[in-house]
Length: 193
Image (cartoon, rainbow, N blue to C red; front, top):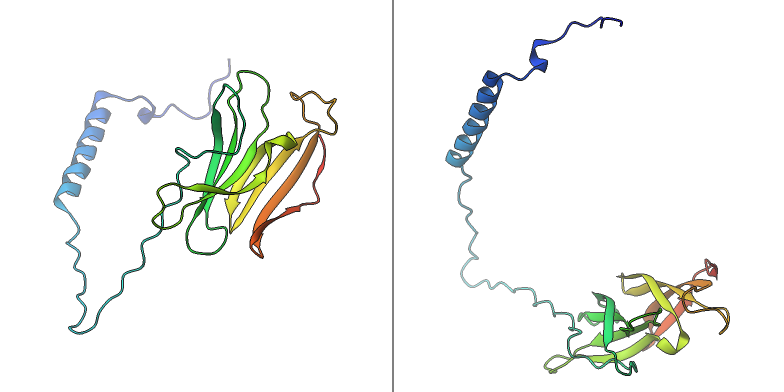
């Protein structure tokens, strides 16, 4: 066996004195931090006769609770798979975008993508647009809302003969509000899986 060229260092073996020194140092830092506190903040008061305007309160995005999605699920309930919020139409009020499917006990139920809005003073939100219809047999992945656009990857089927467990088509889609409607564009990476 070859001996190490570097002698063993004394500090590589923790001794009780090391633990006492560490505990003392930590206690000192804690005690010092409790004594040294920052001064209280003082807000500048506006001069008499000059009013300040507060920013308007941001509107809360619509909730998905109690919304009747246009989805026929039979004996099972609709399940919200994913949701995101954002101001899609530029009116200063956020919309909620929900990916919903039937909560089937087996298989891969198709997704629907719905846009919800709630008018000021309205009791409940409502579905104002369907971006993906469950009748199209698509599964939604990589779902995001950013900069006024909804993007998603859609997994689908090249024919009715393809089993619903195994989608064989992938399409990247983007929806934006233009001219009073949601316009869908497809990026160049649409391809077979």
